[in-house]
Image (cartoon, rainbow, N blue to C red; front, side):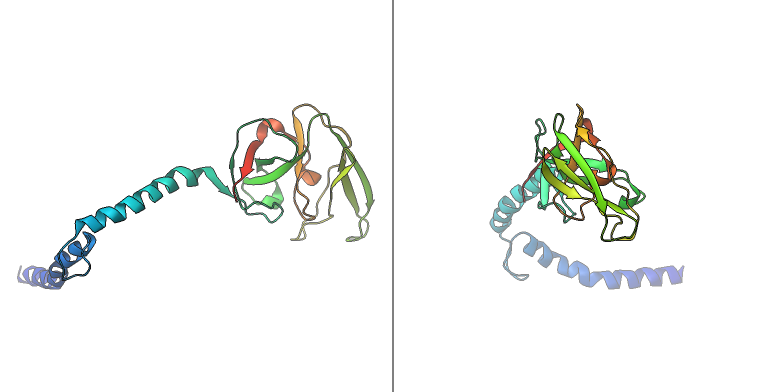
Length: 201
């Protein structure tokens, strides 16, 4: 019992300096210019008038903003933009592929070739890897990109081997970046799996 009393006394003694400083901290929190000066709540209210709207703006806007982590797209931040997907629009989708890792990832690209457009692909020997071929992709005669035989981590890549009119409900997505990972490799995507986005940064 004596030992318990002694421990309790030591705990109160250690706590006392903090309790003595508490009124000063409260005064500063209430807008006092310093710890030994009287509280000025008006300063606190003025600060809250600035901070609270900013906090509310961040809470409402930030969840709708998506940061673009890939260098293949020229945008840094995008947000959802309802409406029909047109050629050149930013689109977001979920990618399931070994190059993306074990878990699906959200990816932002451009919608480059849409239903009714003609996608043309032809192959040439790859200058980067012996006994490999690169695919060259055109939409209505305009070059979209050229495939690579392997990824930056050495993973062997297979490319889309198809030409024709883009069928209804499908789209070719990608970018102009030479190392972009897009429909050159995983093929056409259902438009229903795409979310139209707009660039904000």
